Amino acid sequence: MKGYPEQVSISPDSQAEYDFLPDADALAGRLLLADRGYFKLSYLDEIDQAGGAYVVRAKTTVNPMVVAGFNKAGKPLKRFQKIKQKAVKKHIRRSGIVDMDVEGKTNYRLITSWPEGKDEPTYWATNLDREQFSAEKVMKLYQLRWQIELLFKEWKSYCNLQKFNTRKATMMEGLVWSSLLSLLVKLRIGLSVQQLTDVELSTFMVAKNTQGWFYPLMELITQNIISKLKKTWKSTIHFLSKYAKRAHPDRDKKTGRLQYGLKPIIS
Image (tube, rainbow, N blue to C red; front, side, top):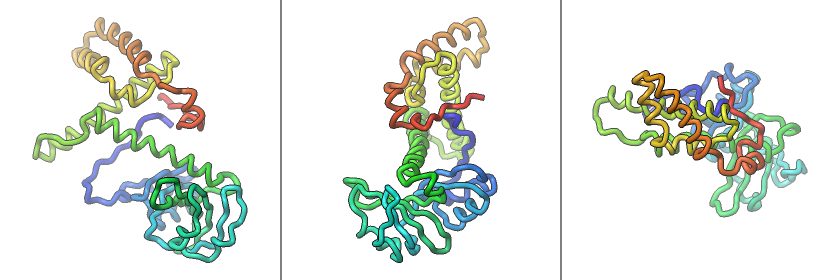
């Protein structure tokens, strides 16, 4: 909702992702979007009990019983009654969508689709109400999680979050945080410019076009030269509003993340 991360955790690759999930009670009245690394049935059940909602990519290693299946129009499908999840694959038509109820250690709604060109179907687990959220709506909601992948791309491509030439752990940690924080500063400035100019900006372009505005602005801030800073800030506004604006804002409102009416909240 804010257009930039509010909380970041750093951990070794050897540590499980779900060790960093929020407490289930903190998700009451909220929606969790997560990929397969965070698919943990006991945790999903805790979210449901706490009054929260989730849409998570489901793993194919689990094998619950499918007790009911529906097509995307809500029509019951008899072939999806009393079969195991691993047997679902042979009943799915290419480009089709199946909405199922499953029972096991945790009961949940399982949505699957087999896109053209893919070798395997994709599964999503959710507890969202079927009457209010169709299978297609749930899949569209999950697309919002793609913003996280774009965020990592911006960090790696334009903030040097890749490899550092040091063997010192403390130095490494400092460089990682510097990389992470530099993008947050860029995004915050970009959102401010968007608010001032009413021009919709691309966070990707804000992160990419660094040499044209970021370095001069940061240098003057560190030197605390107010007279030059005001002039450079005006140049920054002009530069970003011209070279970092979204290429197709109208299209994004129809098919992209803006279709949901989400606008960054600047506070």
